[in-house]
Image (tube, rainbow, N blue to C red):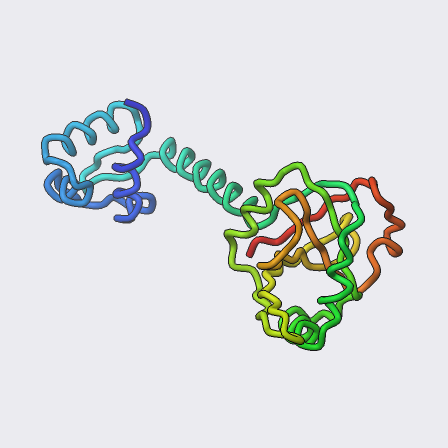
Amino acid sequence: MGMNYSLLFVLLRAGAHERYVRLSTAELASRLEVSQQTSSRWLIQAQKEGWAERGLNGLRLTQKSLTELRLLCETLQASFESRKKTSIKGEVISGLKDGRYYVPLPEYKRQFKEKLGLSPYPGTLNIRIQDMEAKLILADRKGVTINGFSHQGRVLGEIKCFPCLIQKKIKGFVILPSRSHYGLDVLEVISKTNLRKALRLKDGDKVEISVSLE
C-alpha cells in the first residue's frame, strides 16, 4: 500500500507523533471521510507496514513515519521557499526611452519614494529575456502598486513593482507598467543609480536579476 498520508496526517493532528492516542475506527473514518471498513483496513495495513503501532493506550506513529513526514515537510518547505524568489536572465538592450520620460514625473517619483523608499535614476535598464513565463508569474503576483494618473491630457497607468538584485550587487525594482510598448520578452528595471554605468553594461551584455515574489 505504501505510505497512506491521509491516515498519517489524521494521526499526526491527533498528537500521535508525541504519545499514544485513543481513536476508534469509527472516529478515524469520520475524520478521514471514508467508511469504517476502509479506515479499519487502512489502519491494519499501516501497522503491518510499520507506519503505526498499537499499544495499551492507543495508536502511535512509528519512527519510520516520523522520518518520512519530516522529509516531506522539508521538501514542501524548500519548494515553497524557492517560489519566494526567482532568477531571470537576459541581455541588455536599448529601449524606447519611455523610462526617461515617465520615471522622473512628480506623481510617479513621489510614490516611488513613499512606497519603495527609492528616488530612481531617470530611466530604466531594459533586458530581453528568454523565459517569458517568468514575467507572467510576476504579473500574477501582487507586488507594490504605483498608482496611475493623468498628465497633460495623457493617461499614465499603474506600475507593479518587485524588489530585485541586479547582478547580485545592486538593489532595484523590476517594474511592470500596465501600459507598455514592450512585449513579454522585455523586462524593465529601475534603481537609484545608473545601472549601465555602475555595472559597466552595454547592449548585448548578459545580466541576472534575482526578483523577490513576496
